[in-house]
Amino acid sequence: MTAYAILRLSQNLAIKHQRARAVRTSLIILLASSGLGGMHLLGRGAVTGLQPAGGSLFFALALYLLTLTLLLLLFTRARQVLAERDQLKELAYRDSLTSLFNKNGMDHFWEHCKPNEQLAVLYLDLNRFKSINDKLGHHAGDLLLQAVGGTLKQFSAKGKRHIFRIGGDEFVIIAKRCGRKEAEQLALRILEKTTRNYQLERHELFVSASIGITISHGRIDPARLLKEADSAMYHAKQLGRGRYAVHKQGNVIQPVNVLGSYRAN
Image (cartoon, rainbow, N blue to C red; front, top):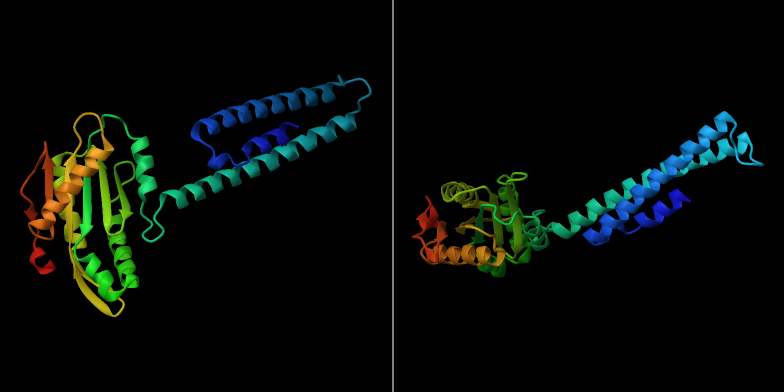
């Protein structure tokens, strides 16, 4: 009965709300503890001969073995549930084209971010992507996005830097405990890696990027940070491709040129 109740509670556990998962998990732990405690008392009673009236040693041992079998099945099912949960999370939070985090993944990041943590937000946009898509087709555009996504992956660092594709040719890099100087150095490294020739099947194209940077101050406001980084990116794009610009206290600092950016025009 304990094993059956736990199996019922574990159904659809992966897709439940966080609070509902916590309640169900607590009940599962309580039921498992009660079941194991009851099994222990029953086994001790069978060994010492203190059995219920009309009971037999064979019946007690059979019930003991059945309980162990059901608990093993339960643990196997629990592992399957956890695996399904990880798979669902992967599908929900990952972009299918680049395997980077998507907008859902970004929302999840903001929900679990510390309120006053220092963050650097880098907003990256590819230059001339729309014209490439229009001239060469969406397949070539997808190949370019996959190549850029693969390049950006090398800048991710677990627990420190997260890379997101939030739509089209727009990418966001969020770095924790990152000041302005470190963010600018990161932007330069990203531009140096992404501004290059790309081999897209029969086509070889030179593609550059523009980056806008903003640094959080005080309590984190995701919408404001993204808006500031996006504004800085457009400012960098207007004054020359292959550059980055930093947003600071309502003003956008003069964009910084990157070697070879003139080739992007």
